[in-house]
Length: 163
Image 1: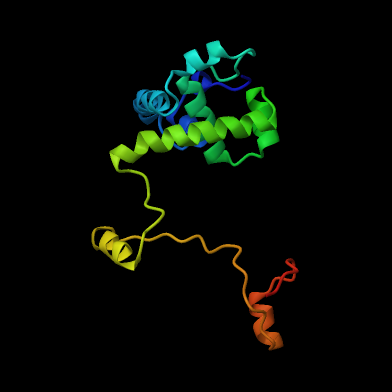
Image 2 (image 1 turned 45 degrees about the vertical axis):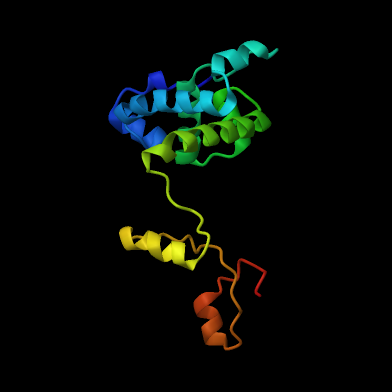
């Protein structure tokens, strides 16, 4: 691995690289490792012993750092793989595995956001307790206005699809 969390020296570096402090990272590692075992039936070390190649991410802390670094920095898979000493397809596999483990670790703590509701009643019940709703409305298609002035206000000219 070309980059390693043990090289981060300050809280500022930790937050810049992962979005969390070193203290929170260290609290999360055992929860992440336990969730990994629950999901896959064996530890990372046991899974690696079954494999034929040497792993780039050897410990749960390595895998968690890898995922948090990816989520914070948004690198392409090929660049992420280069930074961590693997190819892009292995980076994607590791992201998938780590995401499942992180979700399993955070869900029992009640800190995962609710993403799906069965019906409107469940949605309304949920928001009796929770006051914030965040929607990502970027890159939404819209009907292109016929009026030239209205077009100019809401159409950049860079995108060609105008439904």
